[in-house]
Image (cartoon, rainbow, N blue to C red; front, side, top):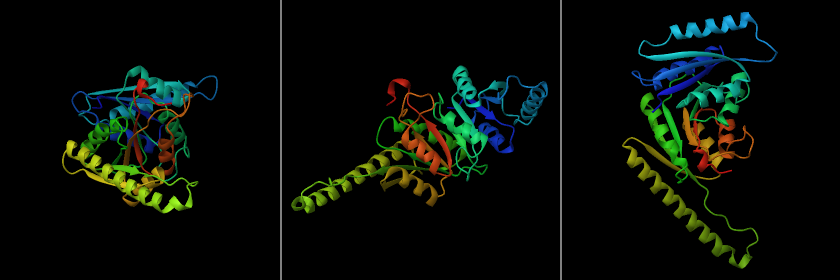
Length: 287
């Protein structure tokens, strides 16, 4: 599924973990890995020394690649780091963008973390942000019953299979709430109806997840949680020690290049886990 993977690197050992992970995910026979190092242009020009150091860094990484990696290329660029990464991913038509951001510190607490957050908002392809060097053993795929959310399913399953990780399909069902303005004489009846509807929604969600799990094969777990969506997902991640969350963002929150889905943003900021994010094709996006 991931024939061509772009790995942006910033010169740190933590960032280079993405390179090792990419070698696991890419097909050994015809997979292609692209190592990208961007020198941030904070001044008018980059020194010859900086360019030479960057070239040496990429060459050293190239030599450490696993022998089974058939195609490996390196690229050095100068400019705004996030913009260069997104533009390169677009121009090279990559299948996966894989980079790291520091875990247990939150996005934006390191230079690469801030870059990863910006890139996630507008990446033209699925993007995996690895926050820890540890082996990924538990994968959580979030669904909501929509075809857009289901785009995350084959991606999550492909990664889990490569990494030999267990998979859980999760849906959060918020149910219904009685309007605050309802007359007191109708309150008891309305609350009873609310409970029945919420139970039915939860049952439908469980059935939907079980059907999805059956389609993809055995060994896949399912979980249905009550809302609210963001806090329930984050709580599940923490309680069950999830290593990777896979989700589809339903589009952009606005017109800016750096806007992205509301729920996705909160999960990125609140959950201390790696993330695999995909978004719909342009004609499917919801503004």
